[in-house]
Amino acid sequence: MTWLLLAVFFIGYIFIIIEHNVKIDKAASALITGVLCWVVYSFSTTDQHLVSHELLEHISEIAGIVFFLIGAMTIVELIDLYDGFQIIIDKISTNNKRKLLYIVTLLSFFLSALLDNLTTAIVMSSLVIKILENNQDRMLMIGMIVIAANSGGAWSPIGDVTTTMLWIGNQITTMGIIKSIILPSMVSVLIPMFLIAWKLKGQFEKKLTTSNKNISDTERSVIFFTGLGMLIFVPIFKTITHLPPLWE
Image (cartoon, rainbow, N blue to C red; front, side):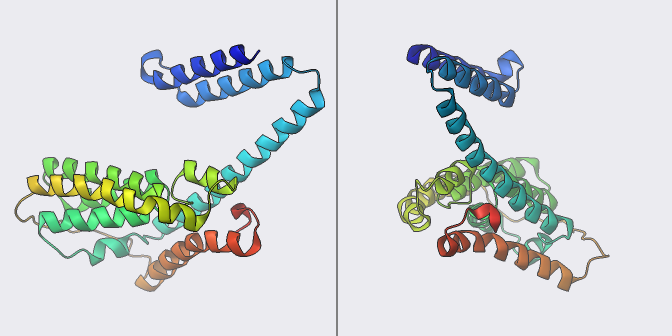
């Protein structure tokens, strides 16, 4: 049964890899693979109570991660709804392409440690599109944003789904992963950043950005800093109370 379980897993993983070729969403492949693995495992033992207990234990862990991510994404969406990210856009005053690259790279790197990688990439890419007009410059900048968002999410316990799962499962600690991963993460960002900076030269004309006039600067600031503060407080809450971060 062990070999059959491994075979089901590897076949399912292959379907996830060739998602675009087989036209089957990787989420569907992953769910089917998970169900089949549990079915095979249930047939490999006579202790059905043990199987049910282990299944419920795994589901509770996954549910905790999902509920935490729903809460985190709700905070991010509220910040975006109230134009909170406009604060970042307004602070960017440079007209130098290289300086803009350095700014958006560092912002993406540290924002993705608090937000998830995809949200950071979307927010920062939208910011670049609003500022730059040249399509080639946009592509280089957005490519760097994607790299920075992924590297930034790696060194924080709440910056990426993978690290969040390990952190909630008590397999890594907050300070442990920061000390171990932050330096390699910074190296993985700085090298491509300087390579792309070599291709970016000259000045650009900053496009005018429009914000929601129904929202005051005070409201925008309150929702932005409150939202980020709540996300920053998550690892502190878990360290103090030892409760799962979903309760925060």
